[in-house]
Image (cartoon, rainbow, N blue to C red; front, side):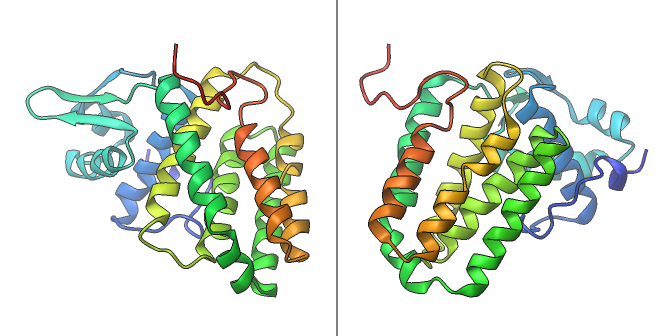
Length: 233
């Protein structure tokens, strides 16, 4: 099977390409399996096995694994191989608080720079979320949910901070998917973004901050409660 056919979904419009086309496709395929739990936390991965499975070179696999390592989705240790990263509640809780701080602190900059182009792009991303939800595609919904939040934050024009948000988003979503109860209402997840768009359209910083803070704190409504600010058990 060619690498290009690993997944029918293309997210090139929302994911920066830093690697070759083939390794990028493999990265997306492995990211999906890690986020959905097909590849289990702390499961061992070998370049040879992955190369045979996906019909590509070990060099392509190595490049994809290096990027997954950068995203914190795998751990690559010298002389010890590669394993899928763990997915602990304490990490998820800490990243949730970092994410809320990053997204909510600079909304005055976002609103000051917002325009019709930004609003249209966010509406387009919302519609892709709705389509994914109607198809029952939880991973695709997650991809464009994350893209929505990254695009909103991009308006703050803080490019050195953006990778921090990207890391928080992927791991928050992974924890939610791996730990939440089954039969979640995916369409409701998409619609949770509508009030955020309304507040942005009104250029209401206070309302946007309140809505976004609540949105982030309740990302795991259907699973473990990560909004507790107390010390971990």
